[in-house]
Length: 81
Image (tube, rainbow, N blue to C red; front, top):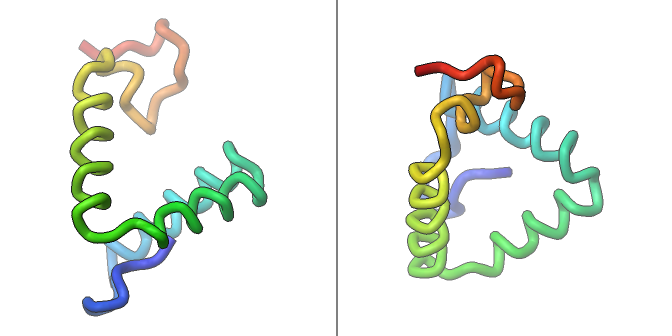
C-alpha cells in the first residue's frame, strides 16, 4: 500500500501503520489476492475512494467492538466492552 501520488509520502507513525497494514493484508489474502486488491484500489478515482472508505467505515461501525479490535483475537472470549 502506498500513499496518494499527489501528496507527500507517509512518514513516522503513518508509514509504520501502512507497512503493518500491508503485511497483515498480505498474510490474510496471500500475495496474488493482495496484488489484485492493490490494483483495484489504484484504478479508483478520488470520488470512488471516498465512497469506498465511507462504506468500510459504515461496515466497521456496525460490528461488535470485540470484532473490530485488531489487537484482539477474533474469539468472542476476548470481547472488550
